[in-house]
Length: 339
Ligand SMILES: [Zn+2]
Image (cartoon, rainbow, N blue to C red; front, side, top):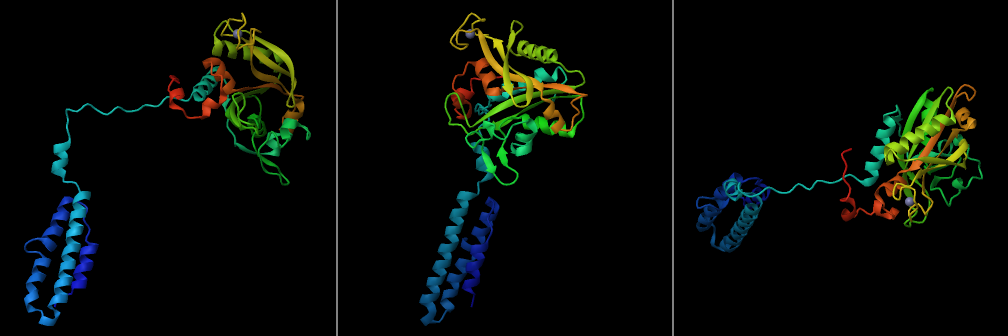
């Protein structure tokens, strides 16, 4: 007698991937000359006391095969009907083309400006050790940036590990691994443990620049920054330097650019001063050069750093920092660029 169990497992394991296989399956099991039909034919040979059970089992097989066949029809598509459905006269689907993020646009612009005067681009890790983020940069142990309030520490073991608080750490890595002349900018994301508001965020982006060579002076720094301001804000842009303090530069200065919104006449963006603060800079402290293995008697250099968000806010007049990371398409779609 036919082994019904074997047929059942053959039905279950039968692979149907296309219309032809579905049709082969139908012919083999449920067609008019199929196995199930054959089994019903065998019923007359089955002893009377087993007829009832045999009949039920064949019915079950029939249901199993039909269910599988019907399910497979939904999965495999008939290639002919697919061609019928394909309407060549229909208009095409719109490709949704994204736009570049405003911070990426401004970062690229800044990179292009410095590339023209020979600056390379350097990158480094966002998770840094104490040496590259603080110690090599002349940060005294009591400096507030080292405080838990300002820095995201990951591990406060023997060697403190933190999310970098500035991209100056990349400059340390470049100085350690190359010999002057060095002319590089380091764009990247940095982190501070701050409450998120319109004016502050726990992460933002910086571009820092570094130029080290023999005989580099403050005049070179000022001229480089004036060139940068004119390239970014237009030929009429002027800069002014105000004395400031940073652990890694001496002397240090804050740099303002003439307000491009009111042409220095005074407006609410420049707080009626006619000037907008854009970056910090200074001559690299000899201690920093020595920490990074550069002879400070032979070489000097300058460094500067700016927040990309700050520059973007000034260029696009966006007053809320949070908008840059909210992924709101209504905001992001407003920016276009060819770089
Ligand atoms: Zn103004």
